[in-house]
Image (cartoon, rainbow, N blue to C red; front, side):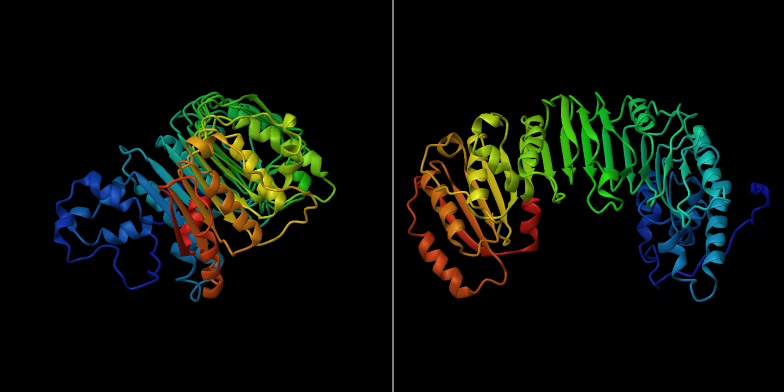
Length: 490
């Protein structure tokens, strides 16, 4: 192992990528700022830029040695400026020397609040583990690691990171590498865990790992592969946010959740996001009663999966989010929901707390029937936002929109926003239905696609303005699509 004492005193810093100084030399008032304020400002900079900024003032000359926030990005701060002068191997060696030097020179009486690094990891290089050991001695609270291994070698979570019992936030982006979890790992103070592009090999070790974090409030699994998992069991009493996104994670369909039973027991969950969620089965052991926002965005399914099987599976997910105040549903939800809608006895869930329903949907008989049935299930709904996809779905179900009393339309629904309306018959029929039955409706916003011809817009406006309205206070507005309109839905 390389000796820390043998490291260079101060490696040569790379040339900045532009001519702009990190700190404006003309701003003399910054010298008068309290040190904690300067630390906060510098926390948004790369550490290499903080050291450059120390030349601005003699008062700041050694300020960087007491910085509680350290940020190192190999590609952003080092690779581009020196690409022409040195080989990538030489540049990375300089990058490691710089981190070693900063950690050696850091004030020993100051703990490190957060450490963020984007680096490489080779099997024969222990630099990353040496840094983590120093951080453990400095009682680090936030650790953000983005690690790329060209050989896809595993990253072993070191046991000595547990010793200080100080870590509260852990984020690992392993770029498709395997995370090796020791059997006795657990963080008693950890509140947030994020795993990105990480391969997990053992379902029991993973379950024991997260279960050994009793204070965990935020769990994010993004682009992860679950090899040979039979059950993905997330049972955490204090968890507030659960984000699982397997879209574009690579690997085979089976390495995601296809052959896995997805089990959730998080009674205090407040935020739930599930993208590309299809598993062998789904169960809620404890339905969260404090749920504020639920987002369910199925991305795509195998052709071999039966339509009815998907409908039943999605209904299991929806039953677990029945207490949500805000519900966001992707297109596939409505596409596969209508078989169950045709048999209401199969889905008796009522969303009594739901105030806002945001949908990404197609627009034909099947989608509209699912939309109206969801309205029936949300008696206290106040806001409906719908983003309409132009793609048509092959639906042979014969059904007409009924004019009937729906609780939310009669008593609560005040705002409707329809995005990307292009004047199709089904869209106009949905608008007519909502205006005719929305007794307390105050505003309906209709947003055209940016490429919809002006003549088509005017034809639609003339027809819509003739529709009967139950609410005398409703205002109907028309506008063209803006980028911010997407954010309002999903």
